[in-house]
Image: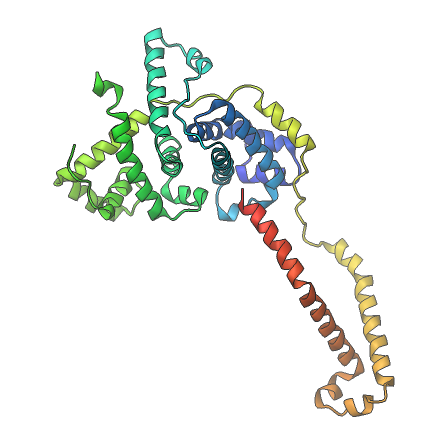
Length: 186
Length: 170
């Protein structure tokens, strides 16, 4: 595992070092993929946009300025913008997403646990898909990626107050869509 | 469940408390308030419940082969722009002939000015008296250079805006 910082690797990428890009890809492919997947609800699209995002990291590396924020935030901005423009083209939500069977069977869980997980994922994907894209963005970045509101503001170029208002609204809507966690409902 | 939500300012304080993103002193104040406020307790409970439900969607592993596609695409994509290094000593040495050439131009223009019929009149001006014909030539060239830059400014501005737009789009 490469010990260099993200910023050092990004500087190498800007100098045309493909190996540095591979290191960044290995570090961030999972969070970036899951960010896009939860925003778009489409696994195929998430894979394509992940490829697109890292290709953009390569071509735009010289515009990354560590003084303006961390690499992760910059990458998330790229991924978010790619997802936004794709969603704007296709105008679809995330309610159709189905659990990934490969990821389900890869874990040592019994069939009942797998089924429960699959139902949970469908329920969450369905609830997220009913939010407007702007509400979905803030929830995904806050809850799944644990970004601070200040960081989300940097990624989305949106004032923190606006993001918090969206978050409150999203939580209130999700409460209606989700009901309680599985344990509470049984 | 039907209890109204706390006002937005209070809810923001609750978010700061829940995510530990606020000032510690303010957090302690909010915590003390929450202990005696059923409405705020309910809001935090709802927040925790929604979060717990959402976390039912665990992280997935991206499909295999993504890096291979990226690698193939960047092989065809334009290389990132090279960082522009600061001029080193070698670069300064290369600049010396250019500086010498600029001084020679100043000297030639100065000599030309001196040969013009209105030079004796111009030479009486207080500033010109001090800087001489070479000084006036340097000033003249500087003004001409400045005017040239101003003429190019709209084109340069347009290009820099296009570049900034391209950068901010990502």
